[in-house]
Amino acid sequence: METTGNYPLADLQRAEPFIDLFLYDFKHLDDAKLLQFTHGNGQLIKTNLAYLLHQDVHKVIVRMPIITGFNDEASLVYQELDYLHALGVQSVHLLPYHSLGKSKAEQMGKPYVFPTEIMANEVLEPYRAYALAKGMYAQIGG
Image 1: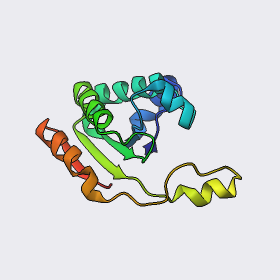
Image 2 (image 1 turned 30 degrees about the vertical axis):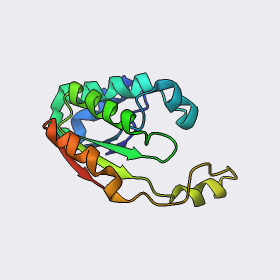
Image 3 (image 1 turned 60 degrees about the horizontal axis):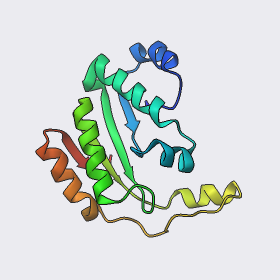
Image 4 (image 1 turned 90 degrees about the vertical axis):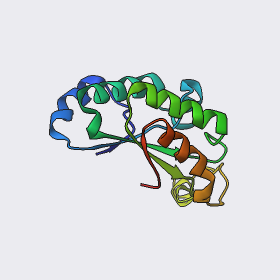
């Protein structure tokens, strides 16, 4: 199941026994910035992730979309990897920024505020190496 984890814990607890694998997006450590850009509840997302990891760490792959102008600062990415490692995450996929959401934004009549250049995989290699050094499985893409 691909998820942002932005729903009540009780809903997750009901569904979790029936799901074999969670592809869990983790977009930002700063709850205020996450709310501003995605309208997501950062604390709820963190609580749900911790719950899933406690149930079965092997059922969770955390996916970190690295989005230009939103969460691509190196210090933030390293902080997020430290946070995820401390939670017990064992597998992380670093997703390079792309502009596929541009057409969706246009269809919805909303401005697209992010760059249109695609992020090269090489930009994410230092983060992958950092996660590997911490003992997590890490890959670019996913």
